[in-house]
Length: 62
Length: 188
Image 1 (cartoon, each protein chain N blue to C red):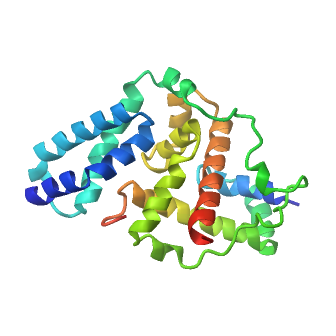
Image 2: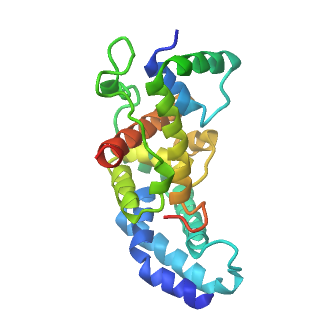
């Protein structure tokens, strides 16, 4: 069973490398049960969009 | 088009310098990079086709100038001189209990329609503030990855750090940025 701490590590790493099948399954299972981590993941995706836009990646950005 | 670029460069110079300072963590180098980018933008103004926004176009030039500096500067010594927590430091430990679950009160809150906030100037002020308070080494790696578009293995090579160390630093940066935005913006 994945801890939240470990789950957040995987949620960061999935932005930098392809997770293994086992890691993806463990993470998926954890996210189904933990709404804190579920939010964390959405927020990670948001941070990536925000950083891209901050760096001028998105036309008309901030 | 040229007028538009000139206007942007003069009106938004502060934005450019702040952006470059965040990447380079050195005000003089940042000023120089902005100057180079400004010159390059003016010289090539006739190549700007108006397909991207002026901001996107200018930032892409500035990013290249920053990348040149990171690549050709004395990057290794510069990186090791930057202030930052030790690699093995407990990451984001303050958020978790000893058993590794969210500490009461540290659990991520719900952010309501965060993408709408990207349209607000005030959001970006807070965003920059949260980037500024990242430790220097953490910020360097994070910016290379998320803003300058380096792959993780390139970052490791450029900065002479291990891949796993790189992941730890990126994780720490994202967690800290998330926590700061939640505290200062989404739950403020």
